[in-house]
Structures are given as structure tokens and as C-alpha cells.
Amino acid sequence: MAIRQLSLTDFRNLRSTTLEFDSRVNLVTGDNGSGKTSLLESIYVLCQADSFRTHQLRQCINHSKSSFLLFGRFDDFKAGLSKSDKKLEIHVNGESIKRRSELVRRVPVLVLNCDSFALISGTPQQRRTFIDWCLFHVEQSYANLWAEYRHALRQRNKLLKSRKDLKLLTYWDDHLVGPSRLLHEMRQRQCSELNELLHTEFSALLADIPLEMLYRRGWPEGMDLGDVLVSQKQRDIQSGFTNSGIHRDDLLFTSAGVKAAEVLSRGQSKRLCLALVMASLKMVGVQTGKQIILLIDDLHSELDNKAQSKVYQQLAEMDLQLFISNIDSRLPEGLQAKEFKMFHVEHGTIRPRISS
Image 1 (cartoon, rainbow, N blue to C red):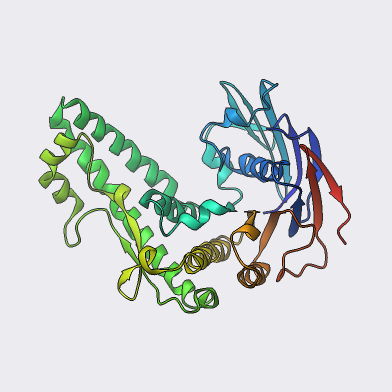
Image 2: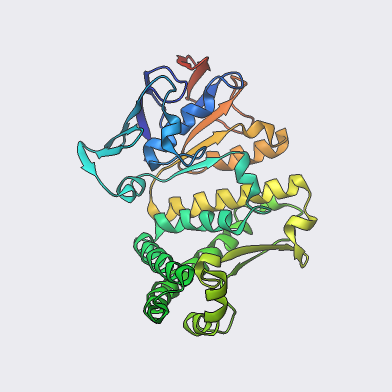
């Protein structure tokens, strides 16, 4: 699902402009601090109504303005998004939508940047977010089930923190257990598929890494979550939150029986992270039949030329629309494209350049 045209007004330091994109490869060049990442971010914000750089969209408003506006033409729909200090408005095909998921589901978009390399050594939350991105797009019921679970979790935690009306805990326990069983099955199945892809189609990136990936659920094996919630009731009351559940799930990576983060070199860890990202892209693309937008920000600073070449060779074989930020105006080694578009960013001004 490619984005064909983007119009932006008062987004960060970028000068207002309208850009026409290639459906496959787009190279964004410029010096550090010129606004390359802001251009990639604007595409992400338009597709996600969220940012990969900040939790507060109002920070994307140009410092001298009161709002920003984004408008995009995709293969089969149009989308517009405006953000002021207090209001966010989203339109799809001219109609206002209230639920962010109605926009997000239309076009899968993923960012590959320095934060992506924290997948192995980072927090369980980062790994759950990685799993959830895949499931959101491939499982139609996932978003509603996850929203149902999160609502029940918030209500249960509210009771635990206040220590009032604790007799209602049983009610919210039931509302946690119901969706958790289905969500657990989805996550387990997805991790199994990712593991298979890692060791088949993306084994070249793993090369010398003996790897095992294990999905660990957020409560003891062999026990039902409902029983765990009852047995841990006093512990939860003391801590003021729910200690067990799918919100505590994690992905475990081991190499020769030892935690991967403890034994892999920095280069090996990066290759593993890249293999995971590409396996997820492959899985979502195949199962949804949608073209994925991949925003690659400053990858050249994280990998040597050999590793970059392997990555781009495999990315070129997938149905992706690539946006690649780079100081260099040449296509990255390993990425063969007969036609592509190039954009140069300088002091917030974006100019198309002849590329082919």
C-alpha cells in the first residue's frame, strides 16, 4: 500500500511542500540535522497518528505555528491528519474517523533505526511491541481483544491501588482471563512462525549465530491464569498492580543455552535484530497481501558495508516501499533499482533530485 503523494504544512522544521514518491525506492539525502528524519517521521505520523520520536504529537508542530497538517494519497485511499495543541483530527477519504486503528490498519508501516537494535538487549515492553505490530496487521480480532484486556487490567489495577471494593477483583479477573487465552495463542503461533522464518529465509544474516527463540508467557507454565490471579491476590494488593498476565509476556533469545544479550557481539546482536525485523516484514506482507512502507533511518552508521549489502539484497526481494535516509546520494550497496526517486533536504527545505 504505497504512499504516492505527501503534502505537509508546518511539520517540525520542514518547509511546507508537496512531494511525489516512487512506489518502490525513495532516497532521502542531506547533512545531519537537515530534516531527513523529520520527513520520514511525517510519513509515519500520517499512517499511524503517532510518532517514533516523541509520545506527544504536539512536539511535531513547528515552533512558530499553532498546528501542523499532513495529507497523503495512497494507492486506494486518501488520508489527512491535523494536530493543534489540544486537538487531533483524522480524515480518510474525506470522512472524519474517531478510532486511530481505522487509519493504522490500512497501511502497515515500520521504522528501522538505531532503536531497532535494542530489540535483544532492551526491555520486555519493546519486544511485546514488536510482537503486537505483527499481530495487529495479521489477526483481525487482535486489536479488540487487546483493548478488552487492557481495559480490564486498568480497572483491576485501580482497585488494587485504592484497596477499595476488592470484592470486585473476581469480576475483573474473569475479564482478564477470557481475552488472555486467545491473545496467548496468537502470540505463541506468531512466534513459532517467526522462528521458522529466521532459520530458513533469513539464515544468511544469522550466519554463525546458534540461536534459540522462546516465547515466555507472563505467568507460570502449567497453571491457569485465573488460578494464578487468585493465588497472587495478596501480593497484587501489596504491590498495587497485577503481577501476572499477558502484559508480562516476553521473547527470550539464547545462544548455546546462554542469554543472547550476554554472549553475542555487538555486530551479531545487530544482525539478529535485523533478521527479526525482516522476518516480521515477510510474514505481515505474505499474510495480508499488502505492500509495507519501511522507513530506514541512518542504517549506514549501524552496519558495515557487507552487512548492509545482505540486508538490502533481501529487502529488495520483498514487496516494500522503501524510504532510506542517507548522507550519501548513491543507493546503498546491494539495493538494485532501475528507477527510484531522490529528495535532498537542506535546512528544512526538501527538493526532488534527478536520480535515474
